Image (cartoon, rainbow, N blue to C red; front, side):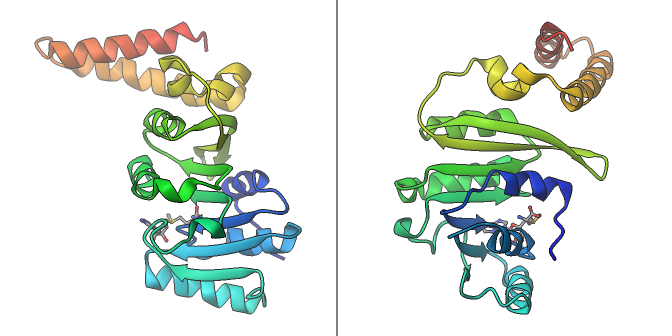
Length: 223
Ligand SMILES: C[S@@+](CC[C@H](N)C(=O)[O-])C[C@H]1O[C@@H](n2cnc3c(N)ncnc32)[C@H](O)[C@@H]1O
């Protein structure tokens, strides 16, 4: 039986039965094998830009005899995926700029895509902003701690909603829930910002001002 990491468990929790999924950057393919075994009526394209990574996935898919459910393909993002083949996208374990680049490069292929599940660790506010601009809103999001790292997983779904700068930064759902992991993550970040502020030379006005404003934003959410 496939055992996912806590991080991938949360990613998997957003993927339903009856979907046509592409996993962009599948690497080992473990998420796809787990989904093939645990979801009804699912079709999956496991894709990766890297041949060695995809070969690992192919090895695992064959080991579990899941070739009838999981198709595999070398692809840079959505380049080699047809829009008719997918209604759900998962992109996990990549930087926000790479993810946004992948979605914007082939935005026409999002025509039938209802849900986009993303796990990225940096520039999450930028990611939220850019994906919502593509015509998706944040249906749900969760923080998960795995091997001492706190990851953010977001489920975007088709539709439009307005988000303030603060909501894009902290996450509209996360901010609403403010659970213990949220408090831990943003309290740590606030402490780091305060240290940074003290270290910025007095004549670096712009950097000091930006850091000061960020500290104010953190303080405003009453951690
Ligand atoms: C850190 S691994 C993450 C693997 C898995 N998704 C996870 O969350 O555990 C990132 C994978 O993304 C692949 N990748 C990076 N850029 C890509 C792109 N533009 N298109 C497809 N795959 C890409 C890499 O080759 C690598 O296998």
